[in-house]
Length: 232
Image 1 (cartoon, one colour):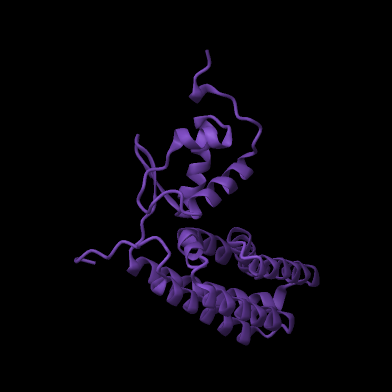
Image 2 (cartoon, helix red, strand yellow):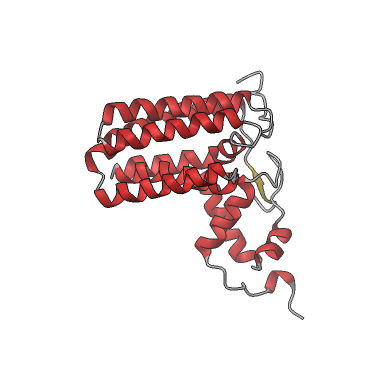
């Protein structure tokens, strides 16, 4: 009889598995620093251990989880200092991406961002957190992609993955005021990008990340961050 670890995959593609697994972790099913339940996930996604572990390697490269030698994987835990530093650096990267995108974005790329923005607004009106967050992140990634700078894109991808769960938690339903503020900021982002005003878009994106950090620090419904150790 074939064991669980020997079951063939049920047809889910590697990219789809990575995406589904990332969403599942970001949505808070595992506590910070908690072990990744590999057997449960194999059953959930209908895959064997091999493709699951390949997907976990991708998420480890993004910084969302940590691989433990011969002991599986765990969700990466961040200190408050880690989060503050990451938000500052990512804010700087997005600010640079905004300037470059205003110089290099095509009309087709702009049209896709506009369409995504409208879809995000519909998700906001329906209080659909999962859809809102996914579309929100897609807009930011599209702006970075429109900058057409491979080094910038790679650095942004590696760092933003570490904050994905924290940014998701900051949008939880209890923070209705921040949701409205974030939507107004996205309207300003779209307006500046449409006018190709690089300096203005750069400033808006940096402030947007700073405001997100503020909501993360003040949010009562996000998973608790680990305090920094006494020795830093």
